[in-house]
Amino acid sequence: MIQKLGREFYLRDTIEAARAALGKILVHVTPEGMISGRIVETEAYLRDDPACHACRGMTARNAAMFGEPGHAYVYFTYGNHYCLNFVTQPAGVAEAILIRALQPLEGIDLMRQNRGMDRLENLCSGPGKLAQALGIDLSLNGEDLLGDKLYVLDDRLDPREIIARPRVGIREAADKLWRFYPAQYAPWVSKR
DNA sequence: ACATCGATCTACT
DNA sequence: GTAGATCGATGTA
Image (cartoon, protein in one colour):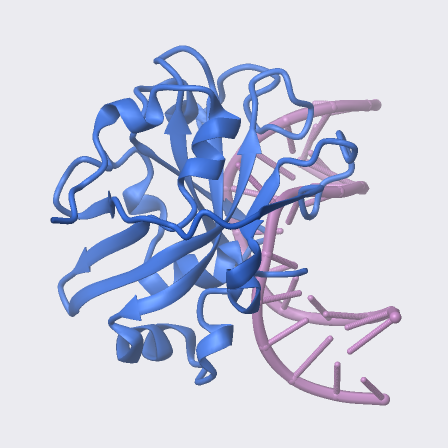
């Protein structure tokens, strides 16, 4: 029986959570139908990390990161794209994991429609892409991941090697290997 | 007020 | 491999 992840999954060390999220299934229930995919790439953002949106305190944009764990933090960037994060750690500790790629599972026709792209490997292989494919925007910022609209299902990941690399698109803390993906899912991730 | 730039993606060369 | 899109958040005046 596959279960929705509980609050305790998110209430812990963010790097551990970023690794543990690999293999889990992200589900968005939309009016057009259910869209889901397996999480195959994550990045950890910690409170004192200069690359983290919250490292200089709370603003209107990053407020969700300071809230309860197990909620979504969605932000808009580059004038075009939304990115989805899961808030970790207790309220007041602003940390999160960025969901960077999915292996498409359900609602693939909807994904193709939302993306205007056909190739399966190009539907969710990047944070902006997967948000577009799943129809995720700012209306889901702060959404409870234990609700019925946007949630995460537990699943087993083959206990093979998880690869750790520097995070993508940041200048600071380039020495930190806080981007994770399982070797066997490399075809679905944003970059090798 | 104004300038800069970003946890990106696509199209084009 | 590189440029252009596109706009809100943030920093500087």
